[in-house]
Amino acid sequence: MPPRRAFQVCPTPGCPTLTPQGRCPACQTQARADRPTSHSRGYDRRWLRASAAYLEDHPYCECDDCSVLPPLQRDLATEVDHIDGLGPLGPLGYDPANWQAMSKRHHSRKTARDTFGH
Image (cartoon, rainbow, N blue to C red; front, side):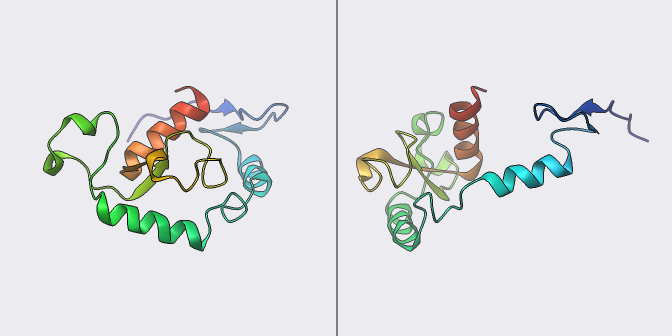
């Protein structure tokens, strides 16, 4: 039987609920409700078409770690990252010079680092 993890207080400010990890279910639900929809953040049909076309021309991950590897040793790219971090609504949102193809794993890592400093 695996060892049990100690419960911790939900990291949402002011929430006293103990949870095995991360936010409690009520705070997770509230955080999702507070987040704007992807469509309102500019990830609409136009973006889906533009990013799909970019991925056809850039099938391998272009992150800093992968860019030093030969293409066939890189992860397959499944997402298009905005280098400036502003998304499709930013001033360079549809400028391919501001895009890089990335794998889901590497894009999530970059987003976490940029958002949370991890």
